[in-house]
Length: 147
Image 1 (cartoon, rainbow, N blue to C red):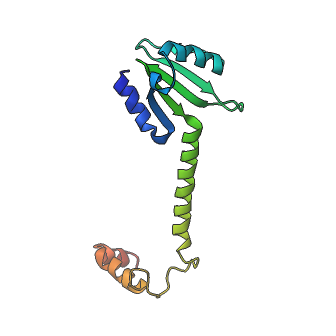
Image 2 (image 1 turned 180 degrees about the vertical axis):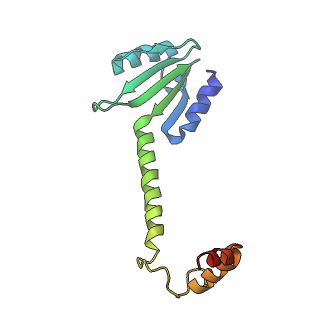
Image 3 (image 1 turned 90 degrees about the horizontal axis):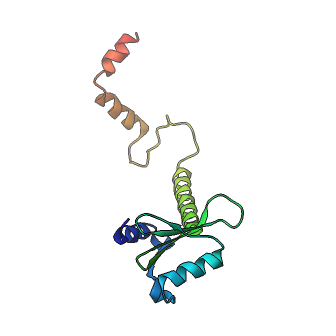
């Protein structure tokens, strides 16, 4: 993975990821960051063949999954915030559910679809039925086969 690939992956995370130069966020060197973070998080770094160092921080509440993922490459730190991602996905799901429910709420609860009242399109049910019958080329053949 190149540095550009890493930056792109973090950009896909939107507000749930950061991409910063290690020396610009208060660390003297990359090595100091790696050592101090491993001590503080009480875990180790995984070293990849392409030069990345990866630290996965497991959820502290005992659930499966990750809280954070740190990826270091060439003096840059990518941080992915998984709880924030989950929260945003839940919010989007809830928003979508509310939109769907709002659309269903606009329909009349009356199950009688054969009424002659004017529909939201301005056509009565009889007009809509007549149009459907005219559009069906097999209409006459179908009805004559049923007699």
